[in-house]
Image 1 (cartoon, rainbow, N blue to C red):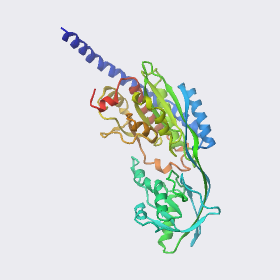
Image 2: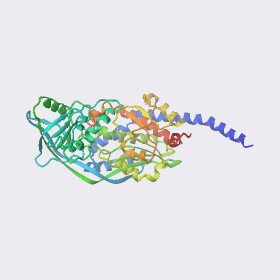
Image 3: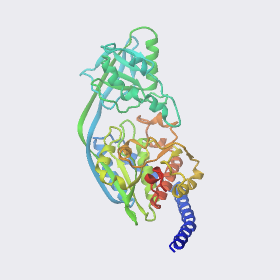
Image 4: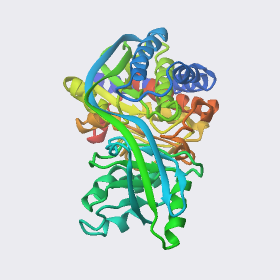
Length: 457
């Protein structure tokens, strides 16, 4: 006697669900189309780079960025706008110079690496040993570089997916430590960059107790040419810096509260801090702008679930992702999905969704909506996520990977060329459109990425 009502209810649900999916698709498509014309993303990044500029953690500029973030989120209509303070280590650059003093004196373009020790007062002068690859330096035993400046000149490969950067990231991050193990008094590395300018690219490195700096790509090649002539080459470094082990930092947070399930949260963001040579436009002012604009557009009609934007306060020198995850451990089970934009502002060309998600009606609606934007759906699972959501990932929060075209990104990031003029407004808008459509479909459906990954429906 109970079978007939159950069958009837099932039939009603089956007939209603396609209609709901069609409505979600139509609205997600409308959000994406609106985003392509909406100026919010551009306005945010223009405001940040103009009114604040470079934003190293621990600096007065980072304090201005904090206040800017709060004011911007409030002006855009976000709710529960607040700061989440934490402390982290902050390395600060001082005066720097480098030059070949013999046998062919010339100036060199360098940028100290985050975590570098200063040189002694008056500088440090020593002969160099040039290594065409990082592995060549690692092949030497302890003590082999005593009294020398180690120079690694390995080139980075340009790739669309950024794997060329990942492939030699250890040259910068671990190189100083490995050079110090072998007795080196300083370490120079060819910038992790694909450019051909005399603008060096900085970045973080593990503290090693020795001065460490990035050479411009052309100056790395200059030292190769000098070393190839067979005469000892001597370089003088003069570098100053300071380190605060407990600098104050902040994650800046704003929400659009859900109407039906406000405790179910979508967390998206980018990092507000930057290195100091440029104005932090592509790394990662663009990510802040993309996610802020996408969240605003996705939440234009009060969403079913809560949308939360986080402007992370210390990605470059670390700390903000761990601080955020620690502060939100109790709610991680209610965080539906997390996403981060931290690869510039060029076009999103592919994406990876959590296991089992692509076939869900909500994601079908999303993928249909972004069809005109020419984004490839990868067969693999997301693996990177982003540094600032890595803490949430470790706690089991589902995440996505949206891959931007990185062909040009490493010409610019961490250098004086990281400025607003490098951002194409149309490309920025495409990013906003993809993210806004995704956030909208997740926020206005009941998709459960955890259950899908476990094989549920």
